[in-house]
Image 1 (cartoon, rainbow, N blue to C red):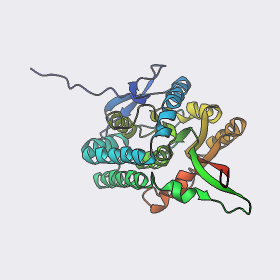
Image 2 (cartoon, rainbow, N blue to C red; image 1 turned 180 degrees about the vertical axis):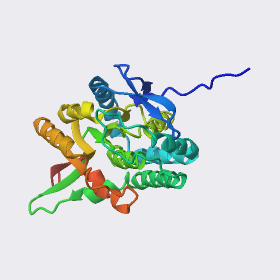
Image 3 (cartoon, rainbow, N blue to C red; image 1 turned 90 degrees about the vertical axis):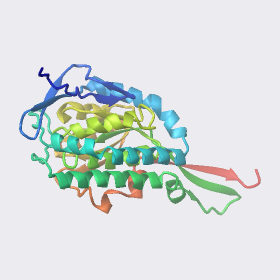
Image 4 (cartoon, rainbow, N blue to C red; image 1 turned 90 degrees about the horizontal axis):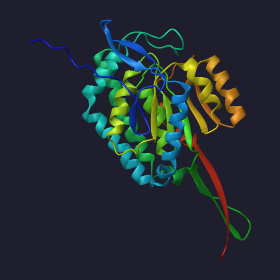
Length: 304
């Protein structure tokens, strides 16, 4: 007796749970042969606001964890990705064949990567997680300082996480770029609300499944899929987002910077017009951690 295969219903990962968009909208994803593969949630502005609420609830607990423990959790995520290379490989090969939506794509490669290229991206993503896991209990010693003062008191500068950070992932290297933007944000104790690649969203869906079974607390990373045209204005103006990082074209950068100025956000955006080599060592740095940290200076009297 013949049977129909049971296909996956992709859902986004928000607040430690898998949800559909509150609007119930979706857009189609095709496989390499051009056949329908799945319907991807088309998240709305309300989904973004709900994700920010989830990140706000998870923020204090995540920030209070020891840097060493945060490093352990991020290292564990790299272990999980190593063990599930085959699943992520399938996701990259399918996701790259997505048909770009007409109303809000950020642009992308438009052709599937080879199997070798996809494996290289997965390996680089694992290495990037290990890199930031290693920095988790060390960046404070490098970025913080004891400041010399000619007076009878000590002067210390220490780092603190900013809070909730909005992340805008590009279409090229949809897994590696997303993780390269997310990892420094959460390593330093922030929580994140990320918008995945529009043309290649499926790797983010599979990444969310890995996050759900990792040691990362729910709400620390929230992954959304959808159209930039609809989501960018809310990323720009939401007052609880304390910083924005990612890749944006000229029009989106203008909207994000104007909105960020009104709500006093820190903005670190790469130009979509100048492609980034996400495989390069230049795509990982201690200063990526610094971009979403605040610095607090304390004065303490000598002998007190």
